[in-house]
Image 1 (cartoon, helix red, strand yellow):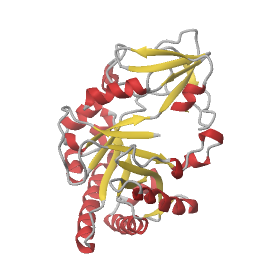
Image 2: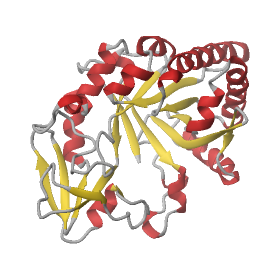
Image 3: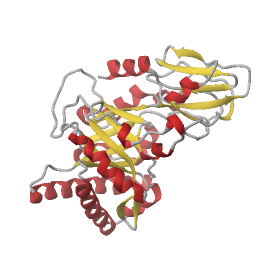
Image 4: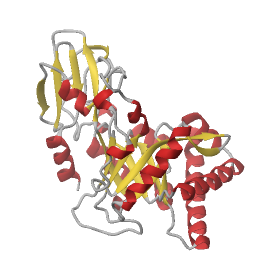
Length: 338
C-alpha cells in the first residue's frame, strides 16, 4: 500500500553504490493475500517490472532475532525473490516493524549483535538484497540507540559482503516525516552516513484521530495550517530531512496508495469540517477510516474535490470524507519533488 520514489530538488541523475536516484521502492503488504474477493493480492500478482525495489512487509523480532511473521511467509519469501528471475535488475528487501521488540533489541550492543547476525542469516537464506528498518514511532530515549543500530548494521553488511564475496546487503530505514519527531528522535546526519536509503513516510500527517477533516498526505502547506501544522506536508518534510543533513540522493518520498476517511458530524464537507471519528471500514481492507485507493473508487455517489493549495484530492459521499491520492496528484508530487 506504500511506494517510495527517489526525491531530489533537481532533476539530475546521480548514481550511488546501489542504484540510480531514479528509483521506485514498493511495499508489498503480506496481509493483502488474506483479503476477500477482489481485495486479495498475493505475490503472484506483483508485476516485477513496475518497481526498482520491492519491500516485503513485514517480519518480526522474537528474542532479539529477525523471524518471519508467519510460517506461511517462508514460502512467500521464495516466491517474492523468484520475481528477480523475471527482472534481473530488481532488488528485494525485507522490512521489520515490531515496535516494542525492536526497541528492546536496540537497547544493548549484545542484543543488537544477536539481531544483526540473524538478519544476515535470514536475508541470505531467502535471497533478499537488503533490510528496511521501520523506525517511524521512536521515543526520545531511542535516538542514540537507532544511530548505533544503523552503524553496526552497515559495518556488519560491509564485512559480510567482503568475506563472502557477495554484493553488500542494502540498508534502508523508514522514518517519520513529522518535524517534532525528527527533532526529538533522529540524529539525522549520523544515521544518513550509514543508510543507503531513507524512506520518509510523507503521509498520515492527519487522520480520523483528529476532530476535523484534513488530507493525510498534502504536497504543500494549506491555507488553514497554523503553528506546527505548517510543517505537516510532503515538501516541508523532505526539505527538513535534507536541511538536517540527509543527502538528497538517499531520500525517498513516500506515496500512500490509500485514503484516510472521516465521519462528518455536520453538514459541512469542506477541509476542516467537524468530524466525529474514523470513517467506515474499507470493504476489503476491513479497517475503520482506512480505504485502499480502489475502495475509494468503489463507493457509489462519490463527489471528488481538489484542495488547490495542497495539490491533492478528497472525496465525499453521504457523511463520509476521505483524502487520497490519484494519478494527477501523484504526478504533481513527482514533478515538483524530482
